[in-house]
Length: 193
Image 1 (cartoon, helix red, strand yellow):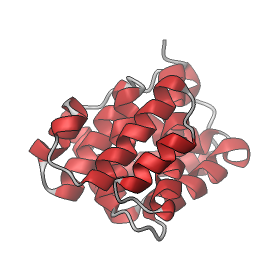
Image 2 (tube, one colour):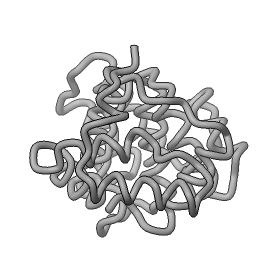
Image 3 (spheres, helix red, strand yellow):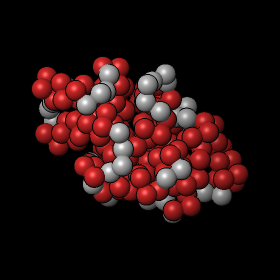
């Protein structure tokens, strides 16, 4: 059930920004962006900073890898909005729709490096079982991932586990294919600020 709070209650500056975005992009502002502006002092500003750092801050993972992680987290969480948004972004970042589709369809046979596969496997376990242990971390390290990569992947997971739950709780509107592609271009150009 979509909550109408996403369509009202914004400050005048946010309303004006939404109008400009719609005029210049030709697409509505995604609800993921709107929720950040609803209560910026409570959620928005902190969420933007944490998500931007996880997705665009210094990391041994590429931007494409982190967008794929976000799409994988959303897929495991069965969040329609976040899966579509980050699948579009990962496809554009990698310039490879078949590879992204392969990962989200069957992680074990997807054409990716073992450190990324092991990391995604660990994130999947964390999301489904709500726990991982030292043995899980040893497996990821044995596959070639570094501690820094594991920490960065967990930051991506935390950001998008939260976002996926908000998307589903608030009933984020599913955009058109063109709308998700436009959002992906924006995210790759500007990040999450």
